Length: 118
Image (cartoon, rainbow, N blue to C red; front, top):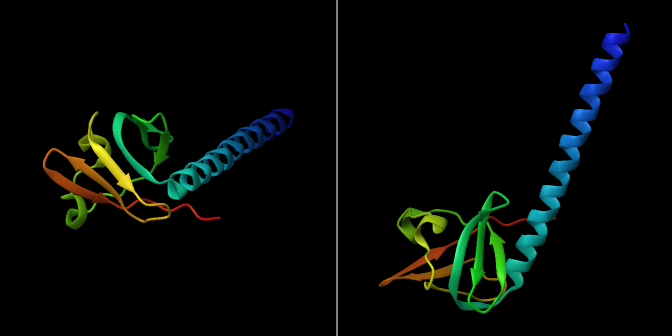
């Protein structure tokens, strides 16, 4: 009997921890989206990384954003942003625009992104 109670307490504790982590990640994703969505971007890329299950992008102007780009054959030739974008490429986006443009070599690629709503 005591063993079953201990297993139950352990399971509830693990579930509570996982739920807390999930809520934190969702809150962080919304914060990242709001910063990215409201930003006017017209800069060169300094670095790209995977961040919070999305793409982290540091710009030459010192700002850094995390966003969740979508891949589309019609907009970006099916090329993933994090695999295509390189240091020195140019990106631009108007505030609250649904599209981020990437100038990569002689190509202009357009990326939409996952929207995080409350």
